[in-house]
Image (cartoon, rainbow, N blue to C red):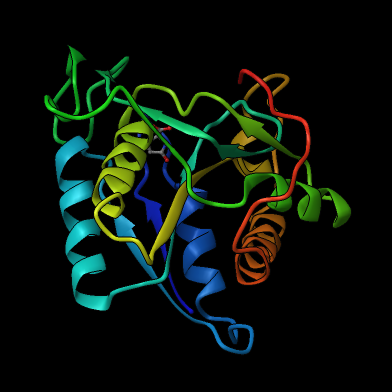
Amino acid sequence: MKVLFTGFEPFGGESTNPSAVAVEQICLLPPPTGVQWQALILPVEFRRSATLMQSCISSWQPDLVLCIGQAGGRPQISLEQVAINLLEARIPDNSGWQPSGEPIIATGPAAYFSTLPLKAIRQQLQHNGIPVNISYTAGTYVCNALMYQLLHHLSAMSSCRGGFIHIPYTPEQAAGKPDAASMSVAVVVQALLEIVRCCQQYSEDIAAVGGTLD
Ligand code: PCA
């Protein structure tokens, strides 16, 4: 199984983005038997992030694409269930573009669902003592747009699964922010490893009750 991880460059005034650090760190570890992995770091730009990811998918032909981004302020790993066809930027992206109220793909459906076995992953992370939820909103910024464009791209390919995972602030980022929850990069790396194992093990999701609206 070939696994492509993507992470993002820093944005929004932060000097680091732990999504990039985590995907680079996991790819330095020996992968589980039967797995090859690689990491791609993407710019926080609505259009270019998806173009770069899609050209990597076309050339490397992964079986699984796990896109990671930061949702600072969330207290747990968020397994995103849904990406919506909407660009609504609270702040400009790193190219200076600040779209509002536009579709990502004018002819695309309103939403796409993750094709990862989210409930099996949630169970596995909880079993390993890692805070996690299934989230029904990936926001309306670059992460949602990347997830939407990923799933649009994969909808034409039957053999590749993909989805998006948001991660909290690191303890270092949270240190200057009152009441901000955090998670170390080491725990995020452990979570990513468990997610890959789960995707190896489960071709179908398990039955369980749902997620939360954040
Ligand atoms: N998080 C942003 C974009 C890049 C990132 O890491 C988001 O949630 O849209």
